[in-house]
Length: 515
Image (cartoon, rainbow, N blue to C red):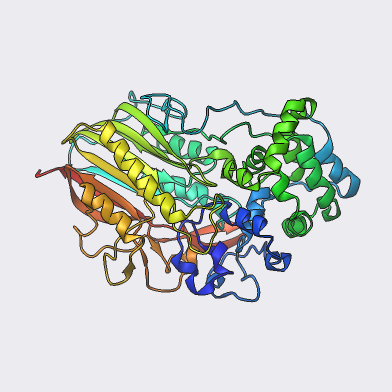
């Protein structure tokens, strides 16, 4: 994801940071009690993000959620989105929207404990039946030529990354037009965007695998949670364009006292108004249950627990696998993670080139300068994810059978003069295990997270190669970029030139080893 959150804080290194987790800055700022003067630059909405990395004293025009924007995303008041909403009434009516003991309009089903096994019994393995679809009766794999596999991080982080709603439809349309046999996508955070993609690709890529959001527990708010916010936010009235800054200024001291489940509920959809939050997130039963209130009080006393139990976008993984080949087995492994759900999808494919074991993932990024909410480190998180991934692959794949690993791995080598390494030791671990990187088969590879991307400012010549299609027991016949072109979208009636995402994708033509 885009590093604009760090851009205003650390201009010199803004473009060197990749894939900032949704909401990560939120907790680090809340718990560190950063003075609100730092938060004053929040809700600009013009298209260009080019000056983010150079901004020092003010937010650049076009900065959608500058460095503290993750607290805004935490409250999910929709700053930076393209949609419009009816504003809540000011004053007492605004407070009433929070404090009314309304039943939730949609209670999510309670999920199992994070990391619990539902298939093979190994810790972290999740049921593959939820969110997975197989429509093998429709469509067919390509009967000739190589098996074409691609990965694309769509950057559809509504409320955080610029023009996410405006980009969603063109992204889906463009991906549906690509002649792919296998596609791994990341940052389809909202279920509506995932469903748009599966509908658009149903003929070409009819078989899909996807984990449903898992907030890590009951994602509801006790009335006292919302009541605390209502008291401090009442003077903000209903002005949506200024609500984020106002709430942050007045409610900074309250945020650490709000339960993780409530924060997860508030973080589900960045386009809802405060009134809609109150109606869908308030848990009247919790107020009536002394046991639940006592449990909430324990959460309040431990700010670190609050951080650890919060997942952005209601616990969405944002990752999905789509293929033309029949899926003969499927599974998933959930990584322990902070702030954003992480995991790996597994599918055994009956491909025209023979059986293929496909793994689709999105690993944690190293976001230097952003404190880890659980007191750990982002680099250590990724290292543990890679070790867990390799152990999982070994469990799932019989020795010698072909494997393809796709996704935004947030690690990569210095593969060309203009391509900077990103945690190269972690990438080398994958290569040492046995994966082959085909990025050089068609000439020097390009970056996939690049400073020349219009969504990243459109300036500069360097970047990192962090999006990969890695192979074992297979050969890469060609390697090319995916959606490496500008995109024009309509934002508030004006044409804006941007990128399909802040990442470029990768496509590899795969053949049997030695074939």
